[in-house]
Every structure is written in structure tokens, then in C-alpha cells.
Amino acid sequence: MDLRSELLKSIWYGFTALDLEKSGKVSKSQLKVLSHNLCTVLSIPHDPVALEEHFRDDDDGPVSSQGYMPYLNKYILDKVEEGCFVKEQVDELCWTLTAKKNYKPEKDNKNVLPAKDAFSLWCLFNFLSEDKYPLVMVPDEVEYLLKKMCMAMSVELNCVELEDFISKDTVQQNGFTVWSFLEMMNSGKVTRGMDQKITSMAIEEVYREIVGDVLKEGYLWKKGQLRRNWKERWFTLRPGTLAYYTSEERKERQGNIPLDGDCCVEVLPDRDGKRCMFCLKTLSKTYEMSASDTKQRQEWTAAIQTAIRLHTEGKTSLHKDLKLKRREQREQRERRRLAKEEELQRFRALQEEKEHKLAELELLKEAQRQAQALLEQDEMRRRQQHDEMQQALEVQLREAEESRASMQAEMILKEEEAERQRKRIKELEGLQTSLEEALHQEIKARQDEEVFRYAQTGLLSEEEEKMKALMALQDEQEEYIRKTQREKQELRQEMENKTRALEEAQRQLEEVRANRHRVDQDVVAAQRKLRQASTNVKHWNVQMNRLMRPVGPGGISRTLKCCNFVKCSALCDVMSAKTEYMTLVI
Image (tube, helix red, strand yellow):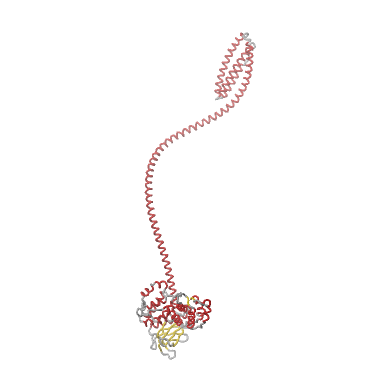
């Protein structure tokens, strides 16, 4: 926290004290007075015209804190030089303005703090408050401050009373304001009836330690540089300096020892009647000192080493550094708390999810149980169906066994029948073979028959020609018969001869008929062997030729007539035989 931030905290109280209507705005006349007083205590020249020029566009209206900040930064704070003013005077100015309006303790209360102590606590509050407006102090810082005060008073902090006060709604939501903090201190719950002087001394000590950057104060014996005698002095240790005075009122400063990185502290053995000695070495001098006891010597040496370290690190205040560290710790705790809450929320979410999943699991288990019951019912139903099916299958199996036995019997019968069929097939195959051979023979016979048929066709054609010739002869014979009928009477003598000739012809005809009968038998045999038929035809031709043999000269005419008649009869017989033959052939 730099000097500008410290000054702004005090000035903020002064500005809000002038805002009587609590509207966030202050009149320009009041700001002039405030600015003049600030320039006075900050030891910078005041420019009254600058305020008028800065707010000349708003002459009639009040100025807000945001409107006053540019002027404050430019014309006042930018001109401030550290070490040229006393900050306590600035705090006293701002405290005077804000205390008149806001600090109104009860007059009848015996525990009311003096104005000086209230001012010191106000300064401590500003130092430890957060860098946010409106200014508040977190409960951890309040507890830290109260513990420091109780340590100064050598009492223990009453944490119960503090927790009761912190448990108020306004404190929990926003933190401690300076007026609620002073109200708590004036209530006497923290001091618990301690003497007011002791309380004031404790407040003063804490104020000087935290606000005044005093690391340690107290009496020490110091050895002189010239006379080398021992004198008791009041030492005040700050980062970078160790000052000593004649008394604790700090009115006469006897010296100031600058501290830097070249300084060191060493413990010395007891001598010259002094004990608990130590020395502070600088580049130019060595300062020998003696504490009242070993504890005080240890505390002083540690405090001086801390002051040297702070100066080496460029830090002007130990408590500013401690405040930043505490703030970082609070932020870390807050981050851890948020992380823990987030983790807790995640855990709760996971727990809820787990419960939800457990509920779903229970539902699933219930569904599984129901499904198991349904499965068991289905299993029982399937078992019943299986038993029924098994019984039906057993019945079917018995029927199948019976059917199998009957089928085996049938199979035996079928095999016997098949064996008979196989034998029959073999017989049929043999018969087929013989039939094929007969067919081949028949085909060959048919081929022979065709040959014979062609030959017979030739014979038939010749017979037809002969038949035509015979018919012509028959016509001539009929014509001749008609001629001879007139000569019948004349030929009776001749008829007798003709009768004998006719009887001869009948005898020959019988022979021809016998021959024809034999030809018919030959035709029948020609179906088996056509060659025999041809022989019979030749024989018939021989017979015909024999009938056609020459006759003696005396009976030429009679013989001719007789031959013609026989020839006609024979031709008729031959034609009928041929017809019967053709019928047989067809």
C-alpha cells in the first residue's frame, strides 16, 4: 500500500463527512475549505483558482467524489513529497471532520474511549482496512488487531464476545466499518473492565507499532563513543533507523543510527559489570548496548536484524508486508474455501448423482426382480410346455418306434418285392435283349420282305399285263362264244369232246386250286420266309407253262378253246390267289 492510497483513505472520510445529505456530492465551497486544509497539512502551495477553473461548467451544483478525484490527484496528491509533511496531521484533520458527524459515543458509558484513543483506533482501522470503498475491515484483521492490543495489555482475547459481534448480519455481509468497530471497543466487551490507562497505553503501543512502523521500543544501556560510559536511553527501532532518546516521552533525541545491508548485530560476553550485551556494527562505528535480560537481548537482536532485512529489501513497513501476506493468506483461504465449496458442490452433485443412480439401481433391481419373476413364470411355463412337449414327443416317439417297426417290416417286404422286381427287371432285361434280337431279326425280315415286295410288285405288274391280255382274250372269247352259240347245235359232237376237255380242264383246275391252296400256304409261309413264296410262284408258273404246252394237230381248235377256257379259269384262279395273297401280304 503506497502513500497515495493511505492518504486517499483518510481524505475519503473527510469528503464523506462533508456530504451531509448522503447524496455522494459535496458543495464547491466545502471542497475549497477541504482542499485548502489538505494543502496546508501536506505542505504544498494551494491554488484556489484551479478548483474554480476545474469545475467552471458546474458552478451551481455540488461535486461528486468521482468529479473531485481528478482535481485531488492533479493539484494535490501529485505534488505531495514523502518526508515533507507529517501524515498524522492529515489523519487528525480528516478525523476531526468525520468524527463530528459520525462518532457519537454514549456519554453515560464508563467504557468510552478517549478521543485520542478513538483517533488511534481510526488510524489503525484505515491501515488494516481493505483497499475498497466504502472502507471496511474483515473480521480476520479485527481479530489480529485485538490480539495485538490484548498482548500489549497482557490479557487473553475474549473470542466469544468477538464472535457474537461478528455474527451480526451487517458484519457478516459487509465486514466491520470503523464506526461499528469503535462501537465494539466502547462497549467494553473486549477490554473486560481493564483500567482505561492500561487500555490507552496498549492502543498507543499498537498504534506506534503498526501505523508508526515501530518494530520495537524500550530502555537499553548504551556505551558512549567518547567518554565510554554507560547511559540508559529509550530506543525506537524502525525499518532503516534506530533512534534513541533520553526518556520514553521522546522529546530529546540523542542520536539516530542508520541501518543498511552493511550493518550486523553480534552478541557480546558480559564485561564492565554489564550483562546481556550485544553490539550493532556499521561501516563507521560499533555501538555497544546492554539489555535487562537475555530475553530482551534476543528480542532486540532479532528486531534489529528484521529492520536491516526490510531496509535491504526496500520495504518501509513491516506491517504493510504482513498485511499483504495476511491478505494473500485470506485470498488463498478464500480460494481454498471456494475450491472446497466447489469440491463440496461437486461432491454433493456426485452424491446426488450417486443417490440418483442408487435410486435407478433400486428401480433396476426392482425391474430385475420383476423380470426375474417373469422369467421364473416363463421358465415354469416353458417347463410345463417342455414337459407337455416331452410327453407328446414320447408318445410320438412310441408311435414313431411302432411306425419304425412297421416300416422295417414293410421295408423287409419292400426289399423282398424289390428283389423280385430286380429279378423281374433282369428277366425283362433278358426279354428286352431277346426282343431286341427279334426286333433286329424282324427288321432284317422286313428288309427282306421289302426286297420280296419289290420283286412281287414286279410280278404283279407282269400279272396285270397278263390279266389285261387275258381280259382281252376273254373279250375275244366272249365274242367267239357268241359266234359259237349259233354254232352250238353244230358243235354238240364237239361238246362232248369239249366236255371231256372240260373235265380235263376241271381236273387241271382242281390241280390249279390245289396249287393255289399250296400258294396260299406258301404266302402264309412267306411271312416267315418270302423266298418260299417266290418258289411257289415259279412252281405255279411251271404249272401254267405246263397248261400252255402244245396240242396235236387234230385237236388244235378244241385244244385251243379248251386251253383258252382253262387259261381263263386259271387266270381267274390266279387273280383270286393273287388277291388273297395281297390280302395276306397286307
